[in-house]
Amino acid sequence: MELTVVLRTILLVTLIVCAIAVNLSKSLLQSVIIFMSYSSIMCLLWILMESPDLAITEAAVGAGISGTLFLMTLKKLRAEDRRDEAEGEEGQTS
Amino acid sequence: MSRFKDRFMRWLDGDTDVMNYVMDSTRTPYLSRESLKEKAAAKRQEFAGRSRTKDVVRAETKGFYALYNVIAVISCIALIGVLLFTVANLPEYGQENPRTVEVVSRYVEKGLEETGAVNIVAGMILDYRAFDTLGESHVLFTALICVLILLRIDAKNMRVGYEDYYTIREDAYFDVSGDAIMRGVGLVILPSVFLFGIYILLNGQNGPGGGFSGGAIIGAGLILYSTAYGFAAVDRFYTLKLSMVITFISLTFYSFAKGYVFFTGANGIENGIPKGIPGAILSGGLILPLDIAVGLVVACTMYGFYSLFKRGSIGGA
Image (cartoon, rainbow over all chains, first blue to last red; front, side, top):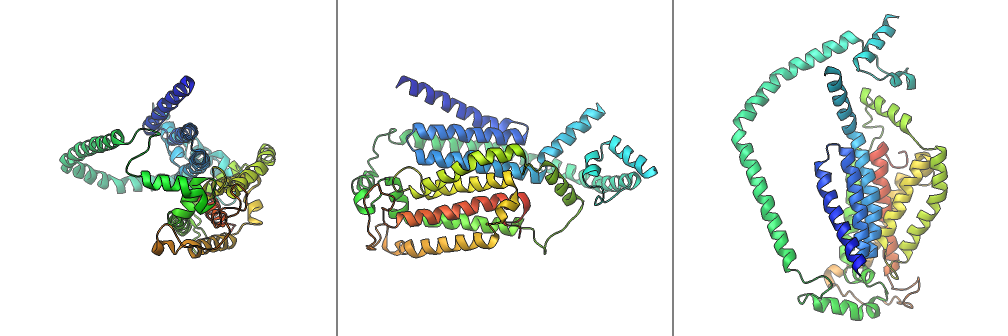
């Protein structure tokens, strides 16, 4: 019983940290990866809340497919490329 | 020779990547260094006027932006307050809510008898509240159609410019399909992924899972299959037409089977389909076929999203 409470507390704290880190991280790629880890933690929490069907869906959709779609969108927008180019230019001038 | 030197100088400037010429030297539109400089100067001139007006606009709307920030913060705090107030007034976790206790007790006590599903959640979402799931499936289909309209590349709207050549080269360079590691991992993982998805799809009335989860897992399996073995492998059996036929048949079946509940209410009418032995695969009356219909729609939508995002088409057409 005690162990479950400890585990749940750790997971909830990590969940909040992840939710804040998604907004604060500078790189969009990092944001997507943190978002996927958020979904994985949420999946564990669904299991602790005794709803395994939601956990399955969260693992497949939240951590898998939506993350993939975010990555594809980043690639389409070349968001990461542009950031790297900008950093490269700064590096050259300084 | 001067062309080579020009290219080298452009590489030194950081304008271009050497790999571009290695991967595809024939189709790259060649732009000399001078013309690029002229273009950049023209662009700078074009934007010089604009940025000044932008500054003017920003100065004029400075008060508005300050007000905007204040209002945004206030509305956020208000929303947080409302949500926290609601959460504080919710019944305690695991306790029964006195306002909805009638519905819950009806579902828990009579659910198995009336729907034939051991998993009460499946009985709720596909029998009592089947119109919710009907709407959800149609929302997924509409989303797929919208993505298809926006992202589909076919003969009519194909527009190959410099950017597209860059994309094609890059895709070819970073394509991992056919890679030994990917194929090996796919060989081990894919059968269990598909089997697990089908198990969840067919076992929705008896255990956790059901149409949406099973369909999502099968869709993820298709995505993994196309990543490991290339889109050509999936195109052999999965085309746009097949995807549309599957989606159409599933949604039509669902609509005919459960569309009437919009008029009769959540209890529906007696359909005479045998409920079967609770716990068996063939039990729960209409729940299993509806699960399969929802699962097929979800799988088609998930793979369709991925395929359209990745290459702008489903099944190579």
